[in-house]
Length: 241
Image (cartoon, rainbow, N blue to C red):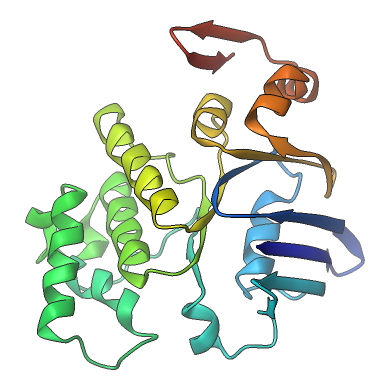
């Protein structure tokens, strides 16, 4: 079980106001309008921003852990990605750095297998700083998968994805669910967020205004009210416009 109870501020401006929720394994969509605090919440959970309160995974308080130990439990794909002058395969391999200073032969095989799964095996020698936004996103997603943490944070992961890769990405989410991972998925695309979600959290003005499963969210017309969106359903697919 993943449990959060926290507040955060930038100077005197309160950004997160007593955010409280608990979710189990599976995919939880974290939705909200621009400026509602979604990215701030993810970075607080990951330990990248200060906050007051508690972040617990299976009863263990994560905020007091060292960076190395935290990286064994939390993996994050941020919205803004760096562009290091390093080979893509090297960057993906950094996902194993919390566990060992040097990759074993088996881990190198795993790195290449993950890159092949995401369709970027041919980029392994390319410098990340020369890649497109979509290619970089795939490289850092591969690094996250190699890191293999029980808690996975995804901040707008479909931003640069083309349509063919989206099906690959959603199959990756299914694999993470099958492995019992807890995934917190921020999406500006309401349709992507809802279709991927087992659970939904709605963040409004720095506080959770809805927490429930996907069916409760749809039955309660939560998205329509919060975003002024219209819902269309066809052949089991839910779309919002």
